[in-house]
Length: 578
Image (cartoon, rainbow, N blue to C red; front, side, top):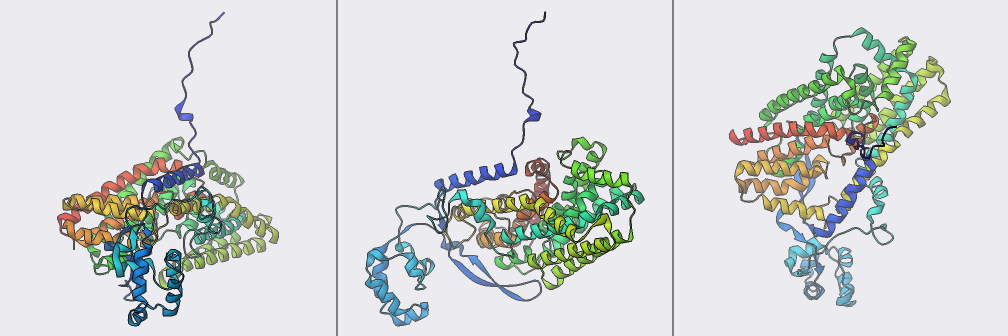
């Protein structure tokens, strides 16, 4: 008779479930909310400046005034009221400020206690205007205020509450950006590819390609990597990668790799190109314009940097890719990739012929992709146009499938497959809104609205003052990388940080060109990692990759990219890049 063991079995740590992406984002939201209790809100005044673009055209952009930072304080009603009583009699000053004298008199007649910034805003006497006229005397500076969201609430009932971050995140922005535009793009593209996948054209095309090009896999991936990197470098390719990823994921898996390789060869490559760009109108040109550096200057250095970083990064990807090809079970996405492997296996077993209908659909897809690239680069097409183009792609593919009776598709099958495609990416669309909610909890990215994020930006700028030039430039790079974890818009990050970083570079003895370099490297690389990036969440969604699994791979690549970025920052300092 055997004795019962009293030893407690050891816990298998390899079987601990990683948190769901939704759970991770909710944890970050709570952490950011708690942070706003500790960090007082601050704001900057903003100015309109003109920037000459790469095409020679002048555009207007709103940037912050680095000297105008102040914490959020309560209004000193007594002082403001007294000053306004003097101002109301100065007709020339009122005309210059575009303030209606009678309206101001009526406001003053209501008494000092009724005075509020909201009422003065309606008279064009904004906080910025009063601050420019009278300085910090308009505030009670004895107590810094915090801007902390309520636990629950809406704009109409008690103000924004952080538990409403999903809805607020989803409805933020407009059709040209995050989150509304990205969500709509994801759903339309998902529906369109639902139709295309239902036709079987991609599956049949992949099988036909694989059967005829055995042994060329190692050449295909680096070439594709360079193509997407070039897209990122030339026109800031980001959201545009989402539909390409839907094609590349099954293709790359069919070659014997995993979905991580597919996203690396597409989205990560585009962000590497964006980080090392010599001509991107959305990053380099904007940052140089704000910093007062000639637009597209330093192109020779950056072009060399792009070639080197893209080559080394492609090599890094291939080392990982070959390891997975030799032993697929090493992939953290091995289980989730089974969905794509099953589709490919089904196609292989059935030996589907590569028919004329399949070929026409693939040719039509190629034509639309060329149309998109032409539209983005030549006509300035963006999210609304791209979504429309992909809907056309899906609709035409469905019509071809009905005409050629591919998979016995009918009109109703086009509609149902569109619905299925939308449903498959609905979860991804929700994550985009959730990620945007993180920024809202921190107070938003508007420099002119008091927030904890503005205070963080100002404090970091002050910390860098007085350090050696090389260290200062390196910390600029670190700061821009960390800042990109929250603000993923390249032009938005440039508008927020460059007005501070450019003059800080002068103080540190670093050229403003290097300050721009630190910005673009930080703003580019981290976009391939941060869960706040709507574009990244979109491509991970189409690849069925959970962000936690992606992070396990990408954190190592981020370390590799950070070393490359640091090396080029140091080289730029040593050669005196101007």
